[in-house]
Image (cartoon, rainbow, N blue to C red; front, side, top):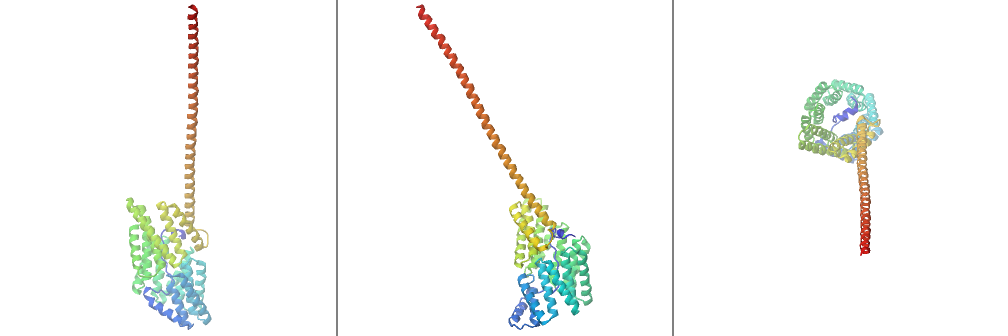
Length: 417
């Protein structure tokens, strides 16, 4: 399935493999920061830096980059391969979330090389999973599937259920986007079942969101909204801005599509209001995370909503932002959705130009008509004046002739006397 189709129909939720620190580990985070303040600069410091990078990955990308780069430098100094591999993996995930896929791809390859050298197969499986996500984003579906299956084999061999659940989720979304809905549902339910066993709420939320994504594709908008809202509710106490932004964007999408099906105009307007509210929430979370790839989804959604409401000025503003950030994220030819937005924007400009020209033409025609009317009235007035003058002249001549005859008669009468 072309990447542009995926963007058109909701945002799916891939999961990168690695450590995941939920909200309740804030105390652990504080402990890690305390350890860093001791300035020991040992392998434990590398481990602490990597964990902090993972902690901030879905909260603040800039902080995640700083900790991962510090871990990379220290791990290289100590020749600590396990710590270096983890730093590479974290940097790969950071650049993937921020939309720099080429950098991400390079770091995952570095991590894989270290895993192969050290024989750390569970970490190798994690990086195969991550590489699969990037390959999917680069539209290489076949290779993405191959890497997911490599990861599945490793995780199965080592009984790593947390990793299996994440790959099941990713395969579920991949199969959904290539039109294999039944297979997608099987994998997503496997992910949810395993996440219940492992207690990984992150995987469960992602997989549940992807099931809602399927409902959206099947045009079951009401149930899609309900499922997305449940996921959003379960995220309320977390700091996962990445997933929050994606879920809010999809809720906006579902409400927007639902508005098209409403026969009641007031209900349709309320759906559009909710769509706008969630699209704005999505953008706020994307900006908090500083993720260009998530900004793209939010801009696209805001463009569509404002276009639907007839606010073409705002629609044009967000279409330009979409094009700007879309270019930086994908670093290639514009996707079909960007081309569609450009065409829509240019078409709208053309329509406005035509409308303005039409109005100008109408105005010119009215002006010409008014001028013609003035000319006609003036000509009619001149003609009337001419006719009246002629009439008065004839009357004057007739009166003068009558007076002359009368004078002549008077003279004749006088002569007779």
